[in-house]
Image (cartoon, rainbow, N blue to C red):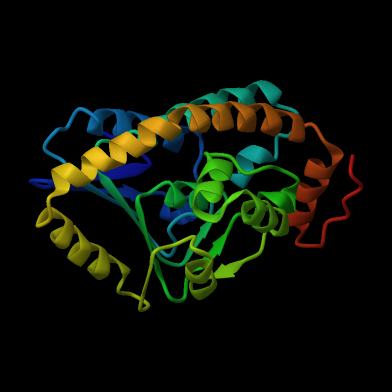
Amino acid sequence: MYKTIQLEKFDRSAVLRLNRPDAMNAMDAVMMQELTACFEHLKQESAIQVLLIQGEGKVFSAGGDIKAMLDAENIFDIDEVMGYLSRMVEAYYTLPMITIASIHGASAGLGFSLALGADIVIAEEDSKLAMNFIGIGLVPDGGGHFFMAERLGTMKAKQIIWQGELLTAKKALALGLIDYIADPGTGLAMADQMIGQLLASPILAMIETKQLLHAQKLPTLQAVLQGEAAAQSRMRKTADHKEGIEAFVAKRPPKFEGK
């Protein structure tokens, strides 16, 4: 059914796997479209009360597909992709179920935005986490501004986004970006245990609480997604973005000039 993701359903839970392991689960336009279709499908699955999101292979997700970004002149393409992305995030945020992201290896850029959008975030202790759009002269997308501000507050979110620091799981936990740390190799076991606990809880009331709180914040998320799409289109046209991409490919430090 899907090319870049896998969905497995159980009685009251489901597992969604990002499935581009050879590309470190980088999120291209096809994956965004498939995630959107998957989330919109799950919204109709009233029996599913918990969704676990994980990555196949060595990492959760390395973020957006850099290969697609290399075509910096293709402005129409980025606008189209941002449209897919906004629809995907809104469908994700409004899922009538508890969502868990289980991170292993790395979660960066758009992949980190996806993880932060979950209700519960688990990261294995040796994971590396980064909201690192700044390194290629871009702004966070995938609702990254919204989810960072929700967890950190505006002032701290700005600092973390501007720094683009590679965070350890321990530092991310201390900041409040993630909720639990698992020993290396045990993230999925912790997630499975958590799913069992949730399904043995008054989960209908929990889902109602989620929906009430998310309905209150949905207009803000929609405004952020619209703003991210416009800002990303502008940033893609800058000399700094071109330099950031070229430096990334050449594995050298970038020389930004504010242009």
